[in-house]
Structure formats: C-alpha cells, structure tokens
Image (cartoon, rainbow, N blue to C red):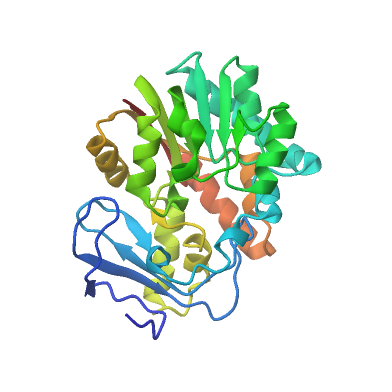
Length: 318
C-alpha cells in the first residue's frame, strides 16, 4: 500500500492480520507523512507510517510492525532516550521520577506485599530501587546496554539480577517464577506481542500478578490529535505525528488489553486511569513553545479534573 497524501482513509480495508486478536481484515485508521522531522517527548524522530485499526478488538497498530527496513531501531533507545525517560540527577529532581515510582510501588503493594518482582524494560533502575526499598526481591530486564549498566550500578547488582537481553532471549524469564511482573510503558513497544506475552506469563507463579501501564488510545490527547488531522485533511498533522510516534507499535484500548490477557488465562482485577504526576508531566512533555506548552498543560488539567489520564494501568492475575 502506498502512502501518497498523508490523509485518513477511514473506510479503506486491507489484508492485514491483527497481531492482538488475529482478526484478518483491519482498517486503515491514519496515514501519517511528516513534512519535516518531528520528535516525540522522548526524542524519537517521526517517520512515515500507516496506523491500522482492528474493529474486532479495538487495538491500533503501526505499519512499522511489517517493515523490512528496521535500520535505526536499536538507536531509538539510546542514552538520550533513557535520560529523557528517567533523567540525570538534576533532571530527576524536576521530573518527579522518585515520587512517580513510590506511587507505583504503593499500587503494587495493594495486590502483592512481598516476593520476587521482575521489572521488564527496567531502564536505569529507579522503579527497581523503589521496589527494593519496599522489601521486594527485585530483578530487571532491559535491552539497552547503557540503561542496563546504569541500573546495575544504581542497585549494585550483577548480570544475574539485571539482565541485558530481549524477552525472547532472557534467562531470567526462562528460569524464574515471579510473584509479580511489571511492564511500565513497555508493551506498546513490542513487535511479537503474543510471543513476548507468552514468555512473560509463563514466568509468573500461579496466582502471580501482571501489571501493565500503557497509553490509552481513548485519552483526550489521542482523540484531539486524530480529530485535528482528519478535519484538516492531514494538513494539521504535527499533533498526531507526535503522539503516534515511531517507537510505539501498539495503541491499546481497555477492550484490546482485556481480550489478549483473557486468551492467556489471566483474570483482570483492575483497570484504572494513570495520569502522570504534574511534576513529571511538566518536565517531560512541556518542552515546546509557549503556545503548545499552554495547550498541553490545559488538556492535562482538564483530563485530571475529569478523573482520567493519558495512560491506563491494568492489573491481572494468573
């Protein structure tokens, strides 16, 4: 299929198989063609791509999943990416990363108060440090050389506790049985989603808990950016390109996440909005010009007042 105009063709069907529910026919949701390079809040440059929509499970997914040109994929998650995500010492004070991870640990403790915890995509180890302080026995899996080394230094652990590997190659996953596995803003980056989830769920103990945090495609940020793209016939496409950025392959709804977890035999215990704390949101997202920063901040405040957030957390039991 050729992208030729950057416009939406909402009724265009294609012979793609949904990676989540295996529905054969999916619909073209957006065609995105940047007129110039745009970066996401974590510094990932935009790319030309199609966003597909599965009418069966509701997931959106990117044509990057089917690309044979993966040049630069490894470079997306470089030092700048992880420093933007978790920050240097100076940055963490501004971003509220420590506050955010204490919130996440307290959430986990509502379901599991102790035991072995594996954080997949552990980045530079801030959540692991907070979980260890709460007396969990912690392990981390991280594909980035830079981030995994920094995580080991932070916790003073070796490779047997903080592993640099892909999910399909992980010794920690193959050998371990965990009381809880966490994926904080990770599942949307997967390529082989069903295969990777099987590896993860197999590593959970019976009655083990899986925690997933991911952007919610029903959030006001997704809704408004898509609306602007469509009513302008693709002329106002910067917001959509910024939010459907290259490093995210999947954009989930509650329905699509519940569907795939149910197929693997998990029982969903809770789904809740997950608004990023203001201190962290401000310093991650509001790094544009004054007009865009004001608009983004207003949307954030409106969403918080309505009890929502850009992200959602789903907690499921094996």
